[in-house]
Length: 165
Image (cartoon, rainbow, N blue to C red):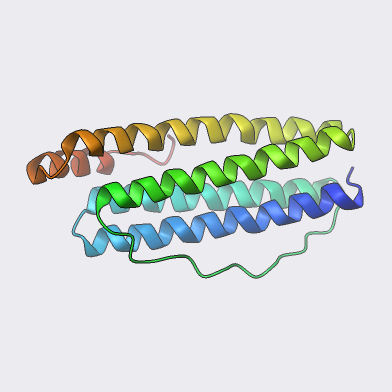
């Protein structure tokens, strides 16, 4: 199912998905330090979701007869600033992942790897959803501004995220 270039692209994306998980776990720790447990909860669920994405690609490579080659995962950033700053960084991160997914899709088109295209289409839809979700959170935080009681209300809402979302 995989030629050399598509396999390399999928292995690279696996690394990026696991790195994304670490970024969100680092953001969760930051929110815990800020005493915003709802935002921390949201980020922990995002961490698990990104692990799921990496594992989905991992299984796809294995089931397609490819060899998974795991690479080192870079240290995630820390010290993100306030809640708005964190979520803007999360949005920028999601946008970079979207670009990577789109580039991988372009590669599968060029290589005429139709089964891989189907899988990547799922990720394209997932990325659109993730960018929209984080964009909405950024917009709400911008509306809140420096209003700490309103921030606590948002924190409470973030705590309501379930693992199935």
